[in-house]
Image 1 (tube, rainbow, N blue to C red):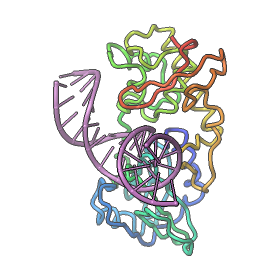
Image 2 (image 1 turned 120 degrees about the vertical axis):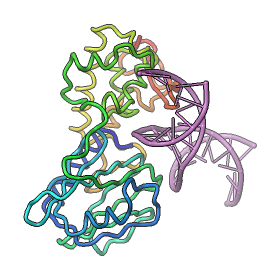
Image 3 (image 1 turned 180 degrees about the vertical axis):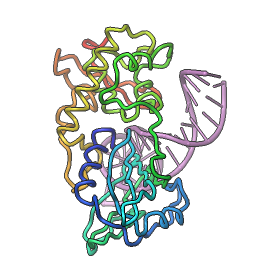
Image 4 (image 1 turned 135 degrees about the vertical axis):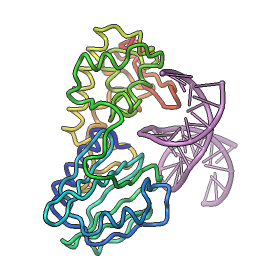
Length: 271
DNA sequence: ACTATTTCCTGGATGC
DNA sequence: TGCATCCAGGAAATAG
């Protein structure tokens, strides 16, 4: 499931591979629940546009589109949902099941959006228009970070997943960050002491940086723009390790459900 | 104004 | 072996 480090990896890969290329034509499938803009608007906006940059904003990818002369045209905003992939393919390569959009590039290659579960979202917006719902977790100002949780009765786990507070953290990195900070996921956000929030802030920085370094976590079917897997799943300390010994103290990792999401923690190391 | 729950989706894992 | 059921979860919608 693509969270911040996976989306960052994919966006970097796409930027490197198709940055500067021009979209010649676009095919869009009939599964309209993926589209936040009308299919015709997406097609019209993409066709003839130069992809100036691919970049990450929260868990979204933004492709900055320009005219051939470089004048800004629009933004193509992509959310990968759970199982979305944006692949750079050879024009001749076989079309994967659940391919919902194909953008044919001047170079002869194709950008293909594939998403079996269809939780992904595609949208076009005016240039510069897209904004993340919350603040960027990487490099977040400490005091602003602490203020995000003030007065919130919701479990800290839910607060971390709330994209209106921080944009980019999902289930894996919420669990991993809370483990490193020594905080139980069910703790009410407002009950965390300043020192604990500082520890959590540091843990998030650490976890996200290490995960990006490893190319993301390949659980389920995540691969980057080149089709390569990431390796951070090998460094998960609690996520999907229910019943296995804590790497610090040996206690069995517990799994509970918070806000409908499985949450993993060490009952000894996390308080 | 918040918070909690439900819904959307398919494929892989599990159970009988 | 085969079929049904469960489970994964990001975020919008709905309910409280």
